[in-house]
Image 1: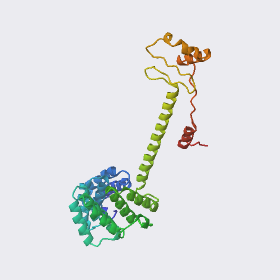
Image 2: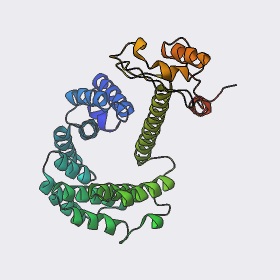
Image 3: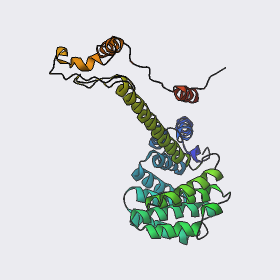
Length: 311
């Protein structure tokens, strides 16, 4: 880069270099801000090939695919470097032109790409076929890139390129509705990618969240059943017309339209006075309801699991 900037005056070269250094430092975490710095460098040195390259890369990572394609083509013309053919094809995909992407991929294959570029071209080719709705063709491309008839168990410990191809294949399986097989692939990729360079861990985070939500829903249903059971033992109907008696207690039900004086005196004579007083007192709410046994150990266990004690 220093060599490329020698054609500028010293003051301008220093400013351009600072913008390019800022763009390079920000491009991974803040690509939009990196793009602003790269554009500022281009405003001062638009005839410098590496400056146009910096703008193209930053624009691609920031999602401005039209500008990325324009700048990378300019860089290729100025430098003769054709290493961004897969990126240019991917820009065509992003701009809704998968046929153009396939044409660029075919041209790049004729140029005998190296192994790293070959992986990128295969990924773009499979993605373009998928954009066109040609899922079987996309699957054949990825299967061939993975060695033909690949299986999750046979993935082994491949390089990053093969891991990316395997991830694309798992995504394709999921898109085809083969969720179970796709998850097997994600599991094999995660095992071969402990640093999560492919980002497949997000699939398992979602599954854990769903399991946690299901467990919480089950706990809520269990608590509702406990509450309903307790109300059946000690509560009254919403209109106050009747109260369920504890097991073994004498059952005397008063009709809400009748007065207590209308109760059959012969029936009351057969019941001990103490039992009558206890029954009436309970009906009037003067006696606390029978205790309801509840098992709270599960709640304490759940709280401990969610919030383990700290030293």
